[in-house]
Image (cartoon, rainbow, N blue to C red):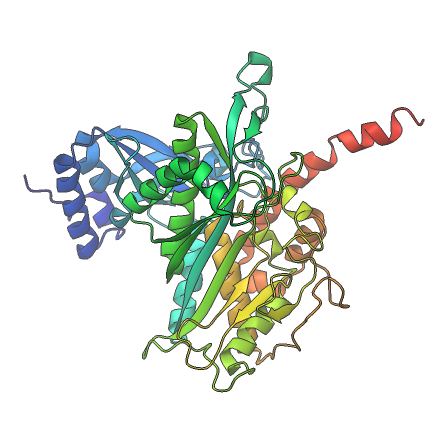
Amino acid sequence: MAHDFTSGKLARLGLFDEETCRQAREVAARVQADGVETVRVLFADQHGILRGKTVMADGIDSLFQRGINVPATLLLKDTSHRAAFAVWEEDSGLSGPMQGAGDVLLVPRPETYRVLPWSGHSAWIFCDPVYQDGSPIAFASGAVLQRAVDRLAAQGMSVTFGLEVEFHIFELADRADRHAEATHPGAPVQTRNLTQGYQYLTETRYGEVERVLDLLRRNAQKLGLSVRSVEIEMGPSQVEFTFAPDGAMAQADAMVMLRTMAKEVCAREGLHASFMAKPRLHNSMANGWHVHQSLHDLATGRNLFVPEDPGMLSPHASGWMAGLLKYASETSLLVAPTVNSYKRYLPYQLAPNRISWGVDNRGAMLRALMAPGEADSRVENRAPDSSANPYYALTAQIIAGAAGLAESLEAPRPTTSPYCEDAARMPRSLGQALSGFKQSKLCRDALGKEVTAYLLQLKKFEWERYLDTVSEWEQAEYFNLF
């Protein structure tokens, strides 16, 4: 059966070119061959959470012809799923469908089509949200990352990322599904540890949970994710997946796929996967997302971070790292986006609490792993956590690193005592991160005023809800005393 998408709405709007139409024809044929019954048409929202609709397999042609509509308010929700913008008010600062809770258009990306191995009859396809006339939504996270990648390419460079992702796998003890717990957000589920105690990288702990780790690893590989290692991490029930290096958009997609796959597969097994930065559980370790990165010359493919002499930094590595350090506070909102993220920045916890770099030092914000002749020379940023929207987080790496090059910055002396030296502190709260982001000329120039205003409103809404909440600490501290 022939599938012609060249005359469809998406092609007419210039959203599907000849190559995309060819890929769409291949996917339409594969849907039939794979025996798929339903296709989950999804986009990664402002938090990196997948949202969308499920269509029947025989609707795939319509999807590639016309896309699919979803409510614009999906782009306006905070982490509690509340609308963070006054969509019904004239002075909300919103326009078009954002103003009146109208529709935006999801444009499928054929290359992201995946049959879901844990389902067997369903598939994913990721989309880009745009306005109905085909014009881009400036603050859509995938579009933000693509613009940063394109600007770097215009300078003759590309960036490669490698990912280390920490998360927890718990036994699900209580689903918190009683009516009284159906709050906004829902009450947290109750869990038990899957592995007991701190036994970092121990064989016996891996053997205890090998069945679960194999299940996640096999599903990740069947999704096409380039899993490099699966590890028992520091804390109880904490694991880490690492991935081979790849381009920015591929790695952002991979991160979203991993998080979603892990949560869905674990739920089927009576387990709960959590990528929360710092769970409020006894003896629980924080989850970091360590982003390895290297810069390459587009013309030659040469890794520009490889130094010529031992103990030295290449000019590109020095400038890129200096940019990451200089703009760490200003871009923190993009790599540590939640109230909870800032509870992770504690000394001696394998997370940074100061803005510094070190040579193979896991306590510093930046860990330099570079040597002459080593083609995989790279820098590891340990500031991001596993709850970050990967599209925004990788954008932060690109704009800060590129700014360091453009400004001819040089990295300072490396630290050997990352928790003791008199270096600038990481932001201590989401409020401080919001302040740094708001004052950042780099973010306004590199992201655009519309994007920065959007993110400020979105995260300010979350921060103010937190400030308005009476905490357990306050109750314990003052209720008896006064």
